[in-house]
Image 1: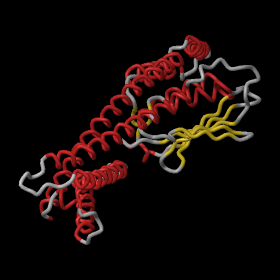
Image 2: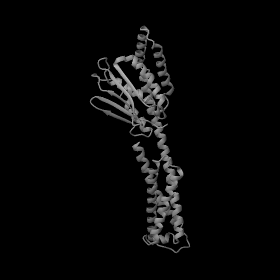
Image 3: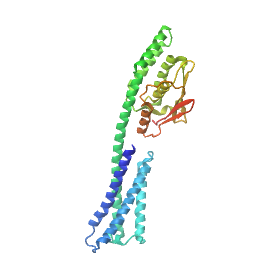
Image 4: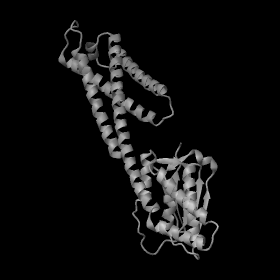
Length: 342
């Protein structure tokens, strides 16, 4: 992302230099032949002044585009009006400096009449602003195409990782082992366990290609997954979900909460004497946190190491640089994820 922005900025700067040098040259070549002859040095002075002015307009507009791009809710007409106003003020300032004698008289040779210079400047500024806008729009579109391609790649990685977690023989065999024990004990929840297990696979297979999903669907999926965990680990695991219903208008990267819960189980010891406590709660209205008490396994954990890193990349490709926050103390470990607007 950073390298793409650097390349785009470099290309934009060089295009600005080219346009700032070319337009005054065309103006001099198109000079009225009925005007008195002037020296090449005089025309070169006028060319330098006008090139510097147009380069300044290019830089001004570039800064305005960067600022206005951060205001997606502003109407396009308002953004266009701001750019036109600033460009108009720049032309007015230039004309005022020429009128008061602050600029060299070589401009007189370029365009002896004030209104002619004003019209030429207005045309040049309009043309250079249009070229800049078209170029930046094209570059931005190319960046978005690359971002979407990267996002698809990251989602593919997440999908493969999710498949390994969900259709992992250990998970399936453990679930079937739990179900077998429940049937032997004539547990009244056995049928419900089967329904939840099928719901987990059905939800995953139906939503695996989606970049984000509504929070309420993510919580439904998590609820089915946690239901199975409760019967599998019994008193070895304590699960608590505290998310308000008002948050259902938000979205999350697909299956990220399940990934975070799986991360808790993967790296910590679970036993009846040392139960693992996992709490999922909403913090600050715009984040959801998965927190667990720390009781790390003594042996190395067989982990691909791509879970949290992949989740960070998915957030960045969705336009959020700090989408995942990790906090760790001597007794607890937590991961907070940002809720996305619908």
